[in-house]
Amino acid sequence: MILSYQGLKEKEAWQKAGITLPDYDWKAMCQATEEAPVWVHFGAGNIFRGFIAGLQQRLLNQGLAKSGIVAAETFDYDIIDKIYWPHDSMTLMVSLRPDGSTEKEIIASIAKGVKADSQDKGQWESLKNVFENPALQMASFTITEKGYAIRDIQGNLMKVVEEDMEQGPDRARHAMSVVAALMFVRFKAGAAPMALVSMDNCSHNGEKLKGSVLAIVKAWKEKNLVPAEFEAYMSDEERVSFPWSMIDKITPRPAEIIEKQLTEAGVEDMAPVITSRNTYIAPFVNAEIPQYLVVEDRFPNGRPALEKAGVYLTTRDTVNMTERMKVTTCLNPLHTALAVYGCVLGYDSIAAEMKDVELKKLVEHIGYDEGMPVVTDPGIISPMDFIHEVVDQRLPNPFIPDTPQRIATDTSQKVAIRFGETIKSYMASSELDTKSLTYIPLALAGWLRYLLGVDDKGEEMAVSADPMLAQLQEQLAGVKVGEPDSYKGQLNGILSNPVIFGVNLYDAGVADKVETMFCEMLAGPGAVRATLKKYIQ
Image (cartoon, rainbow, N blue to C red):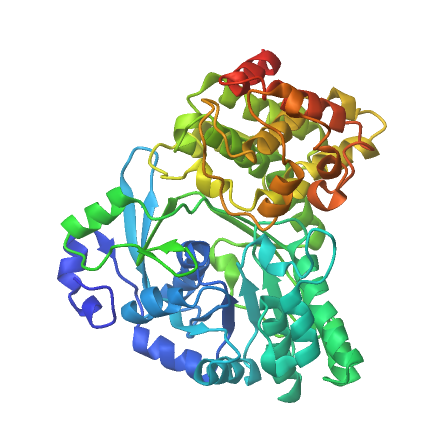
C-alpha cells in the first residue's frame, strides 16, 4: 500500500490494515480548492498535519466543506519536496492511546503543499493566486514561537528582517515579511477581508503575529515601497483580523516502533527523513489523542464551520484565559521543567521522567502549588480537570515517544511565558509574594545548569538548538561543574534580562534564589539530583 491518491484505490487493503480512509473525493477537493481556496496554512510540520488538517478532514467527511487547505512552508522546503509531494500531501495519522493501542487514519484534506519562497517563481505565483482569490477566508500559522520574532536578544532587528524592510515585498524572506508581501498581493487584487490566525503555542499569539507583520508593513510604507492605504488596510481589524488562539496536542517526532508497525501492516515508504534544516519528519504523524483548540471568533470574510470539528469558538478574553491556563500553569511549564532536568539527569523519555519521584513532585508543585493560585478559570475548560489529565494521563503515557531533548529546544524563547507570566502575576498580587516561590526558581536554575552542556554525571552533554544558545553560553563562560568557586556572578546579565524572563528577576525578588540553586548544582557529579531532593523534600 502506498500513501498517495492512486494508492488509496486499494480500499480493501487499507481497511484490512485498520486504517480509516477519507469519505470524500480527493481530486474534487483539490479542484474546489484551486477554484475557491478558503484556508491557507503556514508551517507544514507535524502539529499541522496531525491536528489542524484533521479538522478540515472532519468537515469534508461531513459534507460541511468542499475545499481543503493549502499548506505553505516558510522555513524548511525539504518538507514539501520529501514529505508532501511524494504522497500527494497526504498524512498517515497514528493516534496513540495510553494502553498502547492505536487509531490510524489517512488525512487527505491538504490540497497541496507549497514553498513560501519569494525567489521560487512557480511556487510564489501559486501562493499569490491563493491570496488574490476573494474566497480566501483565513491563513493560519504553526511556525513555532520564534517564527514571529523579528528582533534578537538585544532588541535589535534581525539582519534578514532589515534586508526585507529595505528590499520590499518582492524579495521577502523572513516568515513575517512573506505574510506581509502576500497580503500586499491581496490588497492590490481588491483588498478582500480575511483573518490571520496564529495557532502557535505561545501567549497572545495573535498579538505577536500582528505586531511583527505590521512592523514590516510600516517600514515598507515609510520607504515608499507600499502605499499608506495598504498599512491602513492591514491595521483595520474589520478587514484584516488577528484572532488569538490556544492550541494543545502533544505531537512528538516520528517513532521507530510506529514506522515498524505500519511497514508490517503493508504500508510502504514510511521511513522518516532528516531534512537539510535538521527537521526529523515522516510520511506519518504519531500523537496523543487529547487535543484542544480555542479560537477567538473574528473572521471578517467568514470561516469554515470549525465548531463542528471540535474547535471552541469564543471571545478573546476566554481564549486568553484558556491559553494562560495551559501555557503558564497547567502544561507548558511542567513540560519545560521536565525537559531541562530530563536532559541533565540522562532521561530520553518524558513518560519515564514521570516515574521519577523528585521530577514528578517538581511538576506537581509548579502546577498545583505555584501556578494554580494565579490561574483564571476560562469557563469552557476546567483548569483542575485539565492539569489532572496532564499529570495523571498525558505526560506519563509511555506510548507517546516524546523526549526531553525535543521539548528543550528553543527554551530561551519559552521561559518568559511559561514561568515569567506567573512571576508577574505574583508581583501584581496583593496577597501573593514572589519570595514564596521555590519550584519555579528551581526550574529556572535547572535550565541555566543545563546550558553548561554537562550532565549530572559530570560528562559532556548535547544541548538542544536554541537561537540564544551561543549568547547565553558566552555569558556563562568560566562556570565549571565541580568548581563552585568558578561562579563569579556570570548569571547577573541573564537574570536581569527581561527579554528572556519577561521581567528582571532581581526586581521580582526571585534572582537570588535562582542563583543559590544554580550554584548548589555546580558542586560536582550528583549535585543536580541532590539539589532537587533538598528543595522537593
